[in-house]
Image (cartoon, rainbow, N blue to C red):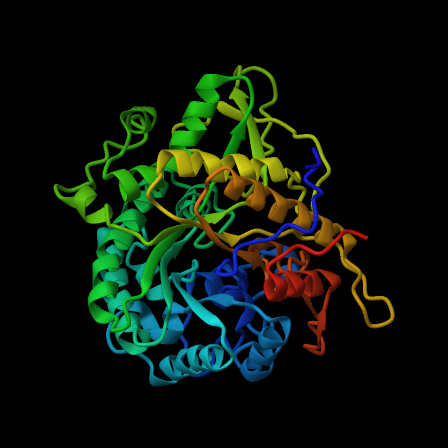
Length: 469
């Protein structure tokens, strides 16, 4: 067992799921085709100054039109599962009313194509592409959005619920709420602390309202989950760590898994909002039994209370667009962290993943876990038609090692989905950051399996990490 997490030859259980993940707006393209209407990310990315180089998801990876060849690629890699997201405005234009037959057909072909190739479909209902019409009516700070989401979830489960193995309600509601409505670094680009906290609650409520409707509409007894991006918080300042844990982690785990908002979280944010948008019965609605919890992990943060005098350090890993992702805790600062770093300037800390998995397992011992995203952006180069991304291979090997060590410590971890299958539209960073285990040439749409893709393929097929060179 190496202190740097560079173990190899680690054997995983035969039923351990090894796969990859994407999101609709990041890969599909066909933004105005097939009956799809605009989402908040269409509006945001087409607003000057919001994304790197003015990049948009209009074409992205052209996955909508290259579905069959991309499915063949997944099969060649031997993936056990593929986590995709359903574009709400493609499936139900405008977010209200009837479903779009062309959109349903696309996702039906996707699911059928996965099943015919022996790949498990994991469908995420919301990966940040709120229909623009619902944002025009107030977006996630409004209670009605949660109700519309529950209806959409039922429609999707009715249409695809005889075949989809696993449903995920929300992907990273932390980002949707705090980056979308607080910091403005994500769509829709608002800077309101109060709106961000209202969005937290209504995203939680949307999840809770959707879960029973999915179970009722689906006919194949699927697994149902939610995916959260966890902040692994480091530092010597206990008060700063407590505040950020409450805001970043417990704002979602406590209502979803325990049926409450923690008192300290409410107290920390009392100057921002009175929480009057929480209605009687909401927390019981949010607290739904889940089959597993999706865990997204990339890096750690180090925090301390700000003295209010010195320049406030804000190394929280997110773009500065004028607002704050930390309502009620603007008096916390985020310190620089030791490298090495990925191209996102996120620190590489596989021990953080092990710590996170063990902590979640201890706090929620009856709830299985799945890593639904983990991966890294690096500046890849094509050499003689190949991509030798040794840094990404090393990153993945070390994080698979962390997962294996957590399992050895008793964590019930069901699988590991690498982010991302393809290089894609990386939100505000446009096409400047590449996370894929498959390279995409955005001019020709050529796919090249990187060395990291070959590495993941070996793990998926053999259920063991390859020996290190």
